[in-house]
Image (cartoon, one colour):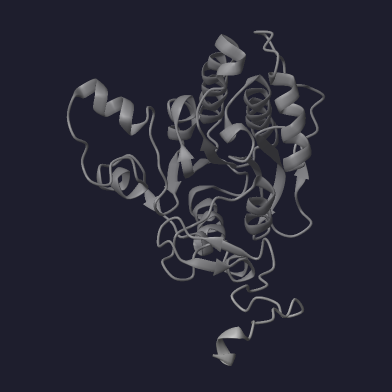
Amino acid sequence: MIVDKIKKRENKNIRPTNKVDIPVGKWIKCEACKEILYKENVKENNSVCPLCGHPFRLSSRRRIDQIIDKDTFEEFKLNIDTVNPLGLEDYEHKMKQLRQKTKIEEAVKCGIGEINSIKVVICVMDSNFLMGSMGSVVGEKITYSVEKAIELKLPLIIFCASGGARMQEGIISLMQMAKVTEAIAKFDEAGLLYISVLTDPTYGGVTASFAMLGDIILAEPGAMIGFAGQRVIKQTIGEDLPSGFQTSEFLLEHGFIDKIIERGMLKDTLSNLIKLNTNDGGEK
């Protein structure tokens, strides 16, 4: 038939209708409810999922913007650099790449700022930088901050987010646990207030030292907190772990932390706790 001999002609100017132009980097997936969310909506909601309430991990810069009064933060400038005691070939290169990517020098930012007009010393660990691991520079920065808080008689707040000690620095990384713990002990002897805020994740040597030494220990909802990982613990004890093991909710139930605070309430909660637990000089 004539119809069978007619050839279909392709129109190369017609674009496929099954493709949708979606701007790159405008959307983010919630790890908890698995929903795809518009990034700006999440940002305006304190980086918390507006559907299920799951808090996304924050950079140290974003955390400081949320907690510290605008234009009051003054970062401590220490003239120290990361060491490579084991002589690992790729460690220094990896550090250089991370600094370019994250725009920060190390896995913690420390300084003085105001929370609702109350002056504090604050340290904020950053999981974007080698999972917030504690090397010699991180330990020294936190120790310096503790000593500065003693000198100025100011409350101390540490936001913890870490995978633990930085194994690229060997025994030197483990020594930071003892160093910071000793500084916290002197801080306590001075009668000053230390508030520890545990965020996701807080693990390893950080949990085993200063993270759990606060006069008041707060945590964000759903934060994973512990020393060893769940797989290691399960293999060691040979038993299944309880539901919700190592979450902030589990730790609150078992008395390891004092309170779980939603991100939108953190700033006011911190300022209220400082007012209730210190006198005009900053002492407890």
